[in-house]
Amino acid sequence: GENVEQHPSTLSVQEGDSAVIKCTYSDSASNYFPWYKQELGKRPQLIIDIRSNVGEKKDQRIAVTLNKTAKHFSLHITETQPEDSAVYFCAASGGNSGYSTLTFGKGTMLLVSP
Amino acid sequence: EAQVTQNPRYLITVTGKKLTVTCSQNMNHEYMSWYRQDPGLGLRQIYYSMNVEVTDKGDVPEGYKVSRKEKRNFPLILESPSPNQTSLYFCASSPSSWGSQHFGDGTRLSIL
Image 1: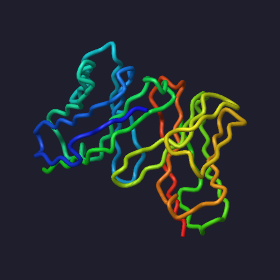
Image 2 (image 1 turned 120 degrees about the horizontal axis):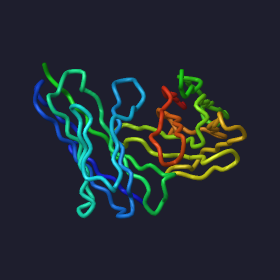
Image 3 (image 1 turned 45 degrees about the vertical axis):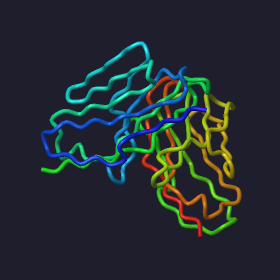
């Protein structure tokens, strides 16, 4: 089945800096890659997603890039703010297990210091 | 308001005592899924359902059962809970298996 590796496990930045979280996946047939943000004690919420026919997608301060050849995708957050502090999860689906199975990375705890 | 509702939110119980965690969505979504979240392991899929009466195993189905008799409900059943099932559980729904998943608020289970 699919295997998703996520790095780093923790990331500390100063307010205003950029943050980058990277994920690699194993199933070359995967073609849907969402990112979720989970604040402490809350449910995961989708912040951005990308499909394999697109190399990059932006939404205000958040962007995701996808390199299908290398089987990795990254989340970029610019001008970080304290409210960006949360755990971020990448995920992949659409591979040989089908779209029914969404495989998550283990998460990155992002801490943005004022 | 569009939402996924899980009950109970918290439960402490003992080994072997059958329990059910309910999940209901009001968005007419076809796809529903259950995950467990453990520290350092992220979210792992337990079971999913593509539609009414259609369910299938995820990555960690052992010790769990589900049913999908109505489109809106997808209960998770632990027939004989054990301490290794102590975890935070999330139900999620989506218009289809393609789409982004909308999560419930979670159920924290402690099995002693």
